[in-house]
Length: 250
Image 1 (tube, helix red, strand yellow):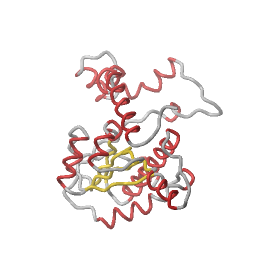
Image 2 (cartoon, one colour):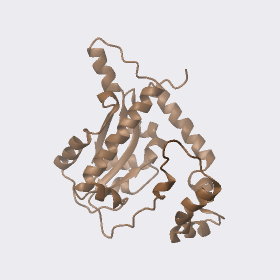
Image 3 (cartoon, one colour):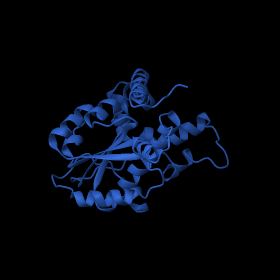
C-alpha cells in the first residue's frame, strides 16, 4: 500500500467499464476501519451511479467532466445526524450541532475517504478527489437530499483508468513540511529552496507565460484561488453550516 501511495496519480479519464457494487462495498468495508473521533464514525457516503443524477452533480461541481464519465461517484459527508438520532433513542442528548463537532466529523470523513482511496488503488481502480464539494456543499447536499447535521465534504470519482496514465503530480520536498520538536518558521531562503522545483517544471513555466504573470504564485493567488472567490465560497459554506443545523457563532 505504501508503494501505491508513492505512485498515486489523479485519474480523470476512465474506461467505460462498470465497477461492481460488490467491490465498492468491499472497499468501503475496509475504509470503515479508519481511525475516527471517539469511535463515533461521524460520516456517511452517498454512492451515485444513475446517469441523470450524475449529470445534476456535474453541474454542482462546476461542469467537471469526470463526474459523468466515471462509473461511480462517491460523496463523503460529515454526518452528526446518525449519532444524534442514536443518542435520542438511548434517551440521551447529543450536543453536536456546533463547530467543534463539525470539525470532528470533517476529520472523520477525510480519514474515511482516504482509507477508501488507498483500498481502491490496491484493486487497480483510479480516482480523483473533487475539492469543489466544499465550495458548493449546499447545492450538492440539496441534490443528494441530506438531512440536518449532514454536510458533503469531499467527492471521489471512481473507475478503471483509461490509458495512457497521467504523470504524477509534483509534491514539495519532505523537509518543507516536517518540523521536528516545534514549528520552525520559514525564511525567504527556505521558501525559494522548497518551491524551486515546482516553479521550474515545464508546465509551471507554461502557465505563468500563458496567463501573462510574473510568478507561479500569482497564477495561484490571482487566477486559481483569488481572494474574492475564497471569501465568497467561505460565506456560502458558513451559510450551509447554519442551514444544516451547525451553530458557528457563540
